[in-house]
Length: 562
Image (tube, rainbow, N blue to C red):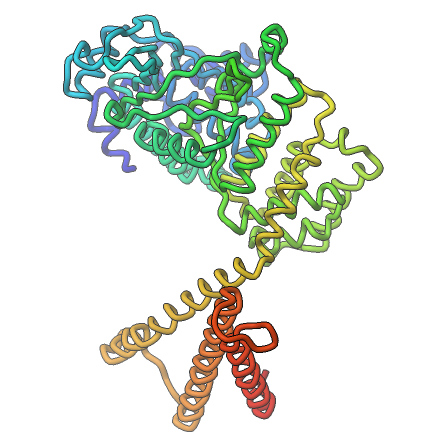
């Protein structure tokens, strides 16, 4: 985001002055000096040497002082710190740990503002939508606050209302953050190492997703669909007719926050069952659904009167594709078996480790990390802690660890802590084992392998279809002298022949693969005339594919080129 937008507006300049003065207050005067921001400092503070402010802050560490500055600077910086707390690959670990202490509690805005905003968004007077509206919010945070409401139809709901004017303020602050990032890269010796512009870019995308309440409603609807028929978990319904980008209306569910153990006991609930149900619900999310709740604040998990766990607040979710889900299953099994060789294989298979990484050294460090757990009972092994340690090790080796995987490690630690507070004897890895084994079993099934082969063939088909277009593009470039290639005439004929042979073999291999897939589908169907107890067409297809495959292998071997 360009800096001119900052310079053009008086409000942004005033905001930049506020930021500079707060940083001075918390002992970052030398940073202001390095970034050449002295002209944004108030005259009184310019008269006092920066070192005085540094000395006044000696009682706090640098991460602590930055966290205090973020708290004073308000919602945007609090959210920035919270996002960074889950990204130890972007910032040093001591900063990430300190930013986890950032609290999102802020004073609520007035009920009249909330009502006006709802009416503007829903284009109707409040009394035409709700029969009652609780003026005192049940929760308030930097982005929104929640009011208890009753619809005209009698349903008890909650309305999440975004703070009026928040988008404009966030847009202004993010433009300033981009400007500060450019100054850090320009003036600080190692500024580019931490990629500040990239950090702000990622934060900008994250906060935009969190500001979209339609997206949060969609997440909630997906979770409700995933847990349909599950008697241990309840997901509230979204009322789409009363939901916009700034307003979210959902079914109101009531219960005891999962961390209030004494109240849970007094209500007569079995803590061990709740712990088991909670862990299994999370394992289903990551190993079956590939979509998990990534904001495991205790207040987001409510123990309902019938013992079910009600889950709320779907603003932050993580995703795991099929490869990541399979890798997680293997990771859990590897931790159970303390098999670091398999763990290394998983990182390589997922492409997390760069080619430049010293695999031997990584494996040695992983062995040092895992071996202390040998001989320990599963009860003594914290799955979340081990997974996070492995991820941090990979990060130290400059591995490309996806944000969702880091988010998963952080979430697992919190879920495990909540579960063990309810039942100290719960074995997270034992609970994970059947889910992991079932996922691996599904991946090895003929049906899945056939579907995977079909997708691979489809991808190969797309690639082949694109080749003529790509060749045409290259030839046009050559004709226009935009791309100069010198050919040796004697080698050109050979190149064409080799390309012709290769394309023929590839086409032949695709035909064989198609016959195998088709025959497998026929075999699974079990229909048609039988031969040796199997569908005749399927058997014939396998025989034909086998003969053609053998012929292809022989021709390749004869050519002398594997």
